[in-house]
Length: 118
Image (cartoon, rainbow, N blue to C red):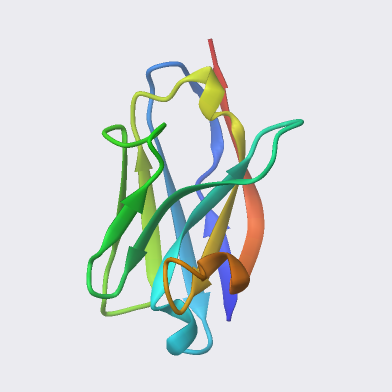
């Protein structure tokens, strides 16, 4: 599975950004799709995931501010990020796999930078 992410950028605190990721390749490898992020000097952490059946998972730090969605007509996922804060600054990586629990063992896209200024 190959993943192509887009939509990063620079925004002021309180603003919004939308990330998109499109996959090509195995259908089984895109049952679960979502995002990890890695801030400078920090470990990579999960952000949000969604399956083809609509099941979702969010990190506590983003629940209520971020919304993940996908069109089951195609292997693609969007992450709507609202009320962004400086601590959301990170490189965001699109991922896909067969389940949410094992998505980090699947395919990874190139990172896209999100910078939130205070």
